Image (cartoon, each protein chain N blue to C red):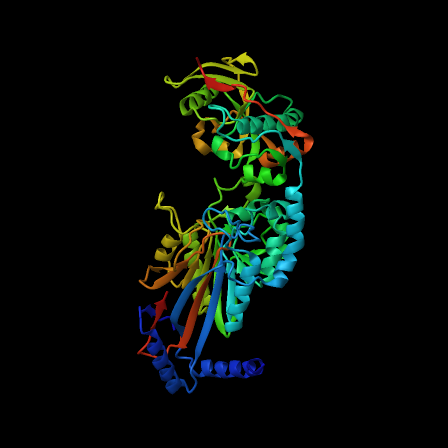
Length: 305
Length: 256
């Protein structure tokens, strides 16, 4: 049951896929092949409309109304899609200053987001400001390393959630960045920051062993990598030091990756780390194809990026 | 249509097949990924856009309505060691924060120091709007007052004399020796610097935490919260006047 899958970089994955289907058909009388699509955004920073045409990095990109079309299109192709956000939903345009996050949450609800995690800027109106906007969100927030025990958010933010699509159990947990020195204490109050790696190790064990998840995703706002401070905990460290995580969706550093980074985890298995810049200028899409393991000939997965 | 009808049956079949394959759990066999650029080639979702529209219109109306008139264009590089924009921003900060500070703490702010890099856009001649305040000050920096010892104020002055940058100041006058990189004369509120006296300096929470290496702000004798964002101070000031007028007055200059 717990035999770990090994990644194989397979260029000719299509043929491998097909022969596998054949194998499982023979052994089970019914081929199982399923596809889960993960769509993700990060650091949208209240960018409701496209960025201005004189923007230095991403002129004219982004915008909720365009993102909505893409999401709808992807969902049409594959109804088994989850839509996630890696935090810093708030702050960056006057929409936030004037409406306090109402538009952001309402739009994300209309786009039918499933889950988001909390970024440092989501505390910009204090945890009370965040709580007051929660009624506008139909999606949930997950954060495993912010301990909200002594705060108003205690009952509203869970460490993880299991989403089920086409029978596939998708475990998603959240991680947040250290708040001290980044956010005023008056804003985050008694929120306690816990070590992301230790928490991620706990989370992946719970999601794997207790929740029997088929896919484990970390929604992270700890940052992709810190070149000037290479020891600072980041998504790359997290990927290396944990196991059983399939995908880390990152935020905070506004990193625009041309394709997901593939990192070897503590067991030598491949983990995908992805991030999509800021302001909703790109949307990340990762498709996971599932197969019944079919026994000996196949115990891995190939990655096409 | 058809797929909708078939789905429950399909799901049932899959369920059956999972059960019969208990020894062979389902696993990831392949992963593919792509980043999709969100540009003008993508069709706008009309429903979403019409939801945003009233907010956008209201916001634009609010942001673009005239609050006052600028008689000149204020920039941050037009006066050597001072600037029209810096003088304006520092003077506004003092003018808006002083009454709050007096009311709360029953004393007075002595002078102001902000940072040159914090001014992100000029104020153009003509109509001044809230949008201009957002562009000048996009960050959420709060005004804070700190009580500094005589020694720390000397450090602050040495910093200004060394950097020779037009950091916005108000109610302090410095004459700087260019080559020696030190101050020749400093007056605060018209008086020479006094030993044994503490000074209350108005700045932002960003600089308080060591932004722009203004380390003299760290660990002050006393920190006084004003709970007033710099941008809001600007907007409130713009609303309170008809015209913006600020002169270069040699508040920081090279000694002759």
